[in-house]
Image 1 (cartoon, protein in one colour):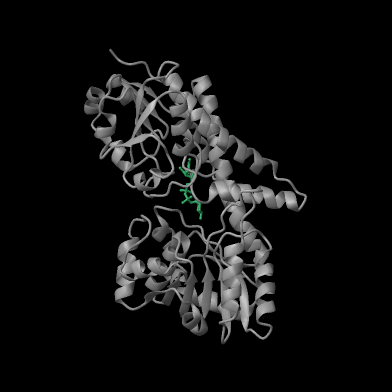
Image 2: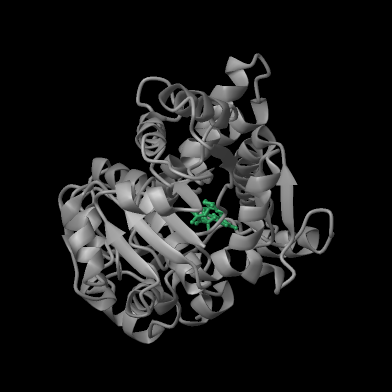
Length: 440
Ligand code: UDX
């Protein structure tokens, strides 16, 4: 099939490369001509494990190409995906649809034979209707169907998630469009991936419902973690125990410094906004947004407490800046709230992150960036782990102890074992787990 992907951001580029890898002929479009030139040379604008190789091999096989001008590719396409950004509007928290609408208008003028216009961007319920109406307005004679096909991939494991989804959701009533979508995802049928056909509005809402539910699950376990800290219970064992209940499930019960990233913060806000507009406020989602914001600030208080009540004049080593591991994405990363709060309390920060430092430099002030974990830790008063990069899990603990001025570690991701840390003589504070007294 001939596929066009409008937008070479995260979702667009990963989806485009994966569809090409399925054997389809894919053209990725972006207005930014420089970006297109770089992509043609195999340069990926962000870090995602495996993506560079996937793009390079599909360029080599002539299944993947890039263009700043969509005209030719759209004219020949069976399906045109809209995968542009839907950022949060600064005035009211709703999703800004101007890029989606702009793309739809542009496509409308180019469509030739029957084309499925697939919305992959996360858009509020009812956007498909709007897109269809504005395209119809541009092209009363146009032969097209507008379909919703939300994407559920996670940064850091995006290629795996695209190729092994729990389900594919396709929102349309149009039989011809269903056929095209079935054909596009046919390689997944072989893995027995369920493809769920729904009404368009259902598909749109399902995406927000999924993200808000997951964000709620994380926020719930984070609050349980706080209670564990006060009562001497262990949140990891609580999560394990409740996760064994099939109705609850084990995933997304890892307590931490609060969720971040490009989706959960934006989508919970937008869902709450939509619900208010329809007169059915979602108090749970609103509480999740509030609790998550407060949590990030409370993480700084936790660090201060672990350091004896004041960090004025101290130097703290921070390991991990990105919102989670295996990405260079700093969007809504907890570090962006925690570090300035620590600085306001008088600490100097030396930080290391395997992928996030370039982006962090534009977002954080007065941070000294280190070339490796030990360069950050050396001579610091305490170590704070903010992101759970695998490479931090196996650091030499004896060397950390020697490098730190005081043996204090605050681990906001629970990557170490409290028992082991006590054995090594660390004052070790983690999330929702009892602090074990240092062994003599
Ligand atoms: C998420 C959704 O998982 C994905 O389906 C959707 O398409 C986009 O948003 P992503 O933002 O890439 O993906 O990351 P995810 O792995 O879901 O983590 C989101 C945030 O929640 C991160 O800050 C992560 O650290 C946090 N998290 C996740 C927890 O704190 N605990 C958990 O148990 C899981």
